[in-house]
Structures are given as C-alpha cells and as structure tokens.
Length: 141
Ligand code: TYD
Image (cartoon, rainbow, N blue to C red; front, side):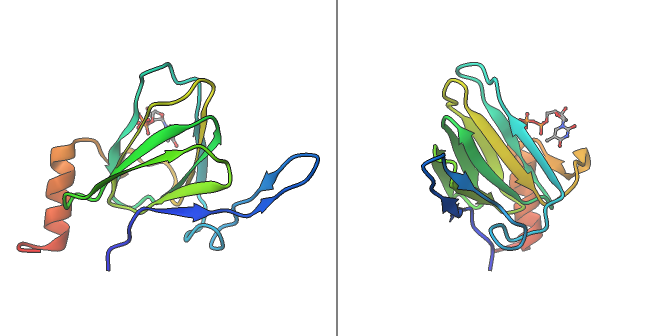
C-alpha cells in the first residue's frame, strides 16, 4: 500500500529550563538520516519546495514560527498541514509533491532527509510528477 504523509508526534521532555525534543533515525522517522537542512529568513509571501522526489523521504519540523505544507500524492489527493509546534513533524514519503508557504516572521523549517542531495532525484514540474505517478502505478490504476 502506498505510504501517506502523516504527522509524527515527537518526544517532548518538558523542563522548567525549557523543552527538549528529539528525532532518532528509525525510531521517530521511518528511515536512516542522510542529510539535514533548514529553510529560514523567508520573505513574507514566498513559497519554497514546489517539487517532488523520486526516492528521498523527509520529516519537516517547524523549529520556530509556523508555515503550511501542502502535499499532493499525484492521484488527486491534496492535503495541507500547518506546522507550528517543534514536537510535531510531517513525514513526507517519496513520490509526493510538496510546497511550503505562508511562513510566519522568523520561522525556521527543519528538514531531515533520507537521501544525500541529488538534483536528479527532483521532479520539478507538476505535469511530469503526475506522469511519473501514473507510469509508476501502471496503466489503469
Ligand atoms: P531546493 O531544494 O531547490 O529548494 P526549494 O525547493 O525550496 O526551492 O534547493 C535550493 C538550492 O539549494 C538548490 O540550488 C540546491 C541547493 N541545495 C543543496 O545544495 N543541497 C541540499 O541539500 C538542498 C536541499 C539544496
């Protein structure tokens, strides 16, 4: 069965000195971590993402502030998640179109990824993404 984008509730250790949350590979994310990057200083109204990956899987966490993540499975199901708390992550399976938008001031998006950076893993056109999903699932599915 095809995997779906899902919110993962991460451990949170509340403390009078402040909270602590953690992601451990294959425990809180269903993959081995190859890479971590973050998106920050996003000007108001800008969008990031707007592509899919063939193999890369991700966990996206709002470390600060808030933003929307829209995911599209290529079969006509589009969902939007507003990330605003540092102890929740959005797991995005491979083969998912995703766009990040509506960043609040000073927001920081942490992205934990299953694959090293590879431009050839990107599908940057929505039309090509839909064709990719259709071809992958075979005619008639
Ligand atoms: P990109 O993934 O295209 O960002 P977005 O989808 O938000 O527009 O990455 C932007 C640039 O950063 C791109 O030129 C390649 C570079 N980049 C790396 O070199 N390594 C990475 O791990 C990532 C995510 C991006």
